[in-house]
Length: 291
Image (cartoon, rainbow, N blue to C red; front, side, top):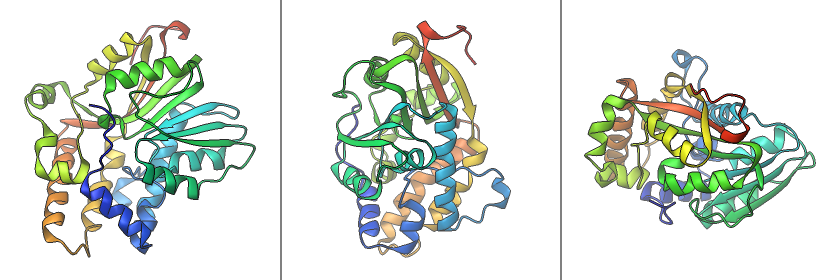
């Protein structure tokens, strides 16, 4: 599938609540729209403010896995509201940053909220992740924070491989199914479920670690790091359930909770894990060993 132009209805509601400056929504999702990361999940309180901070920590975990350094050229594909670029802009200097998204509304919010500092440059680009209108070898790092499941992965990996300069890497976060879950996932289309479709749109959760290795190899990349942070993300679900308090439409609450519960159960039962993956260029790596 391509990076779909239409967002799920849940996302439309999120944008409306942000536009209305709902304080809980702004605190939790004003910067990032992805799962959170807790060092000690047992101590999570799951307030909106804590969730916003946890989402920032997840963003930093992905960027640190790359790792990002001063002076790099970086593109964040599926950049959302620009939270990852905002974080990089605050932490590093002399970066050339590009945020790409197919939804103009998200890019507008990002452009309003992210201003260059520390000698960094920032550009926002409306385009499809499967067809990025930028020259070969334009970047040192390609990032995709919790969005690759919306893309045509094969075409996206081809684009990432093309865009990376010598020694560059693709670093992303994704829900990765276990091999025992893969056979079941191959027989169903989760996006056909009404709750999933309403809440998270069209997505593909069938890319196992072995399939990621195949994708990488086909595009002169190699999987260098696979960091399982599933346990650190689990408080996300408690917060998401609580975030529906005050929604006027009970049917929408039912759909959202049903879809979110499906993801939670899959992760808690070990059928799926939340991973940070780093892919390096094969012709520039020191070793062909993979994790």
